[in-house]
Image 1 (cartoon, rainbow, N blue to C red):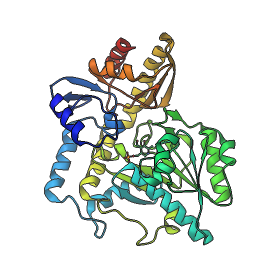
Image 2: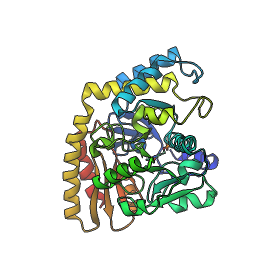
Image 3: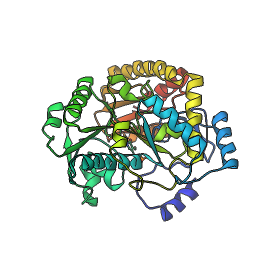
Image 4: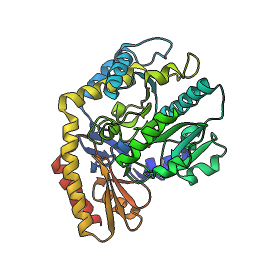
Length: 392
Ligand code: PLP
């Protein structure tokens, strides 16, 4: 491992701080490093590997598709993409979809669609977008512009302009940002990177009402909290409202890089026209067969039921830790996206956990984040709690 890490340090652009581990393979909810050490996975490649690792059905589907066709571009049609489009639109209750290759690109598309919608409506440019403090939407210039952590944005200014930040779960602060020129409000129904904060039902309902009254588009970024992670296919289903635009990625492809931007017929008919937006790889048959297979396996294994049951068990066990250890302040989350807020930075706990064969990551300096594969079982939750307690 040391050899590989040394080479990596010479050649990789140092954009992130890495843990000193080289992954070799995975199986179920376990990962193995190149020294053969086994780790229990509670991070899923940052909320991506929803089926865990080495799922035979998934692997076979991808291998078959590789032998048939990998890339076509959007200049033509391919059957896996159209099947994925049909299924996702039906699941989301939104009529139109555009496939991307990552979450940040889905967010870029959402922001562009909102600006185009407002432009066609008023014939003016310079429309404003309201985003949330503590949010995370990606690292490209548009997605970064609506990301609520100032230190991520500052070195790259000017980003796209006319963004205002409101406080999450504070409706008045959203109202204070609204002007005649507001074209969209973007938020994560469960703020993930910002520290695992679920939206309060009234906050979401009030924003939906405001958007309807003022013809403002409501964008839900479900890149991290979508695809079954909260116990429903999309987190917004639990709030009794629907967005005008939704972004997906991460678990969407079960590991293959793919994202999507969904929108209502009304938004689609009144925003992008041919030539406004595209990406070379978007909707390629390899990535979209991955989506179809994830959806097949979700259905066949009733994954949402597992998420609900395991979430309850995980919550109970995390709550016991909150009661037992003074250094843990609280638990927050929905389904299998949970966070433990601690009184001090959790970096040492994460490092100790790795030594003991558990992978957990943080969401901000003081929050331990739990985003296991959605196939996780009770035994693995018990194992995780036992290892974690040894680290606290
Ligand atoms: N939106 C949310 C809510 C995310 O959590 C992330 C990544 O963590 C993104 C967007 C960006 O996705 P990607 O890293 O695939 O570009």
